[in-house]
Each structure stands twice: as structure tokens, then as C-alpha cells.
Image 1: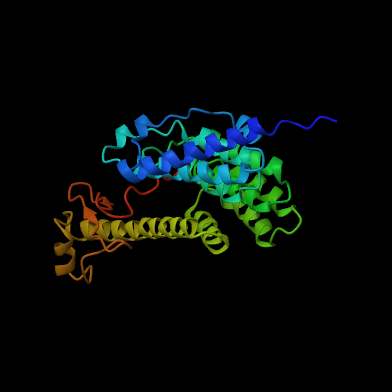
Image 2 (image 1 turned 90 degrees about the horizontal axis):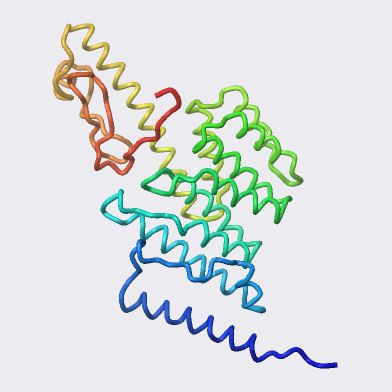
Length: 297
């Protein structure tokens, strides 16, 4: 019986290792490549998986780091209109093809893809495709269904589909009891802040990594800011009806006893008051800006 030649496979692994080493050296000397200069020379995860022999998981780690670099590098660009994310999904697809059990790539990647431009590509379709790929790989991982429900709800404003997906997640063996309750809430009051808050709280409590927990906490702070803005605008309206003129500034309301102090958003930045319209908004330099666009607004 003839043995399979191992030399070509070994040589290919060495070449891949050398390429990775060159990338690491390049980044160390010159920093991250600009997003516009990023190129995927090999787009086929299946080819890479065959070529890597027994090193597919290691190569998946490398491509995952590149995906994070690519996403983070774009978000740090000063000019929002210069951000490009067209390579993000191909990178994530390669990662999850090389290592189909790379849970964090599905869960993080779905949020990366769904983030609205310019903070992300705003590709709800690709976010859904990535999570559905994870569900096909491991139908018993209820968290993928939970994430898919969340993406439909928060980014797609498709509350019925979100509720149906949450209900499907609740039927997966091992899923927690609150998934069924969450599905019921989505069906009955989809689109309101109460449901959004419940989703983010559950995600923050169940997330198995710090980035997702921090992102959930940030979104909850945004919802707090929306509640505070509603209350401040009620005060402004009441003042205008009482005096016949809108307040010129927060100091006007403070001097009349309508407010105890200058109102700050949850990040500690003062709110802005438009004296002409009475509308309240977070400042452009607030860590919470821009606030999410709510249905019907």
C-alpha cells in the first residue's frame, strides 16, 4: 500500500505559517493596514481548511484576530464616510468554516455585521446568515437562536420574527425558562423600550465575554437617556404652557425651580436644549451619541 505524500501538505502548512508570521511582523513594524488596503487573497474557507490539514483551528484563530482588527480599525477612522466593511463577512465566514464550533465568532460577528453604518456595515442579512450557519452547525445551541431573535428585534425592527425565533429558542433542550417569557413579551409589546431593556439585560447577564456585556450596558444607558429625554421634554412643555414662552436654557428652568440642576445624561454629559422647539438631545460628544432611532420616529 502506498503512503500518501505528506511533503506537499507540510510545505503548505509551513507557507501558511510563514504568511501569518509575516503579517504579525508587518503589523508590529507598520501598524494595522488601512481598511481600504486590506485584501483577502484567499476567500475560500473550505480550501483553507483542506490546506491547513490539522491546523484549521489555529488558522481560525488567526483569521478571527484579523476580523477583529479589520472591524476595530474601521471604527477608529476619523471620517465616518471613509469606513468600509466589505471584507468583514468573508473573514467571519472563513473563521467559522475553519472552526465550525467557534462560538464567539458567530455571536460577536453577528453584532459586528448588524451594527448600523458608520459603526458597522449595517448588514442585517449577513448577520442573519452567519447565525443561521451556526444554527445549522449546532442546532442544540439555543444561544444562537437567542442572538438571532435579538438581531431581528433590535436591528431589524421585525418584532414578529424576533418573537417566533425566541419561541423556537425556548424549545431547544436546555434553553432557560425566560426565553419563553421573552417570546411572549415580544409578541405582545414588540417595539417598546420595556422589551428592548429586557433583551439587553438578558444579554448582559448571560453573555460569556466582556465586550458583549459592555455593549449591552452601553445600550441600556442609551435607553435610560431616552427615558430621561422624555421626562425633560415634559418639563419643558409644562414650563412653556405655564409662562407662555419656552425656556431659554437649563438655567431658566433651574432658576424657576423646575429643575434642581443641569441635567446630565447617564454618561455624565449635559443634555442639549433647543430653545426654539423645546426638544432635548444628547450632545454630539456624548459617549451615548447617537441614540438609537425608535420605530415611528
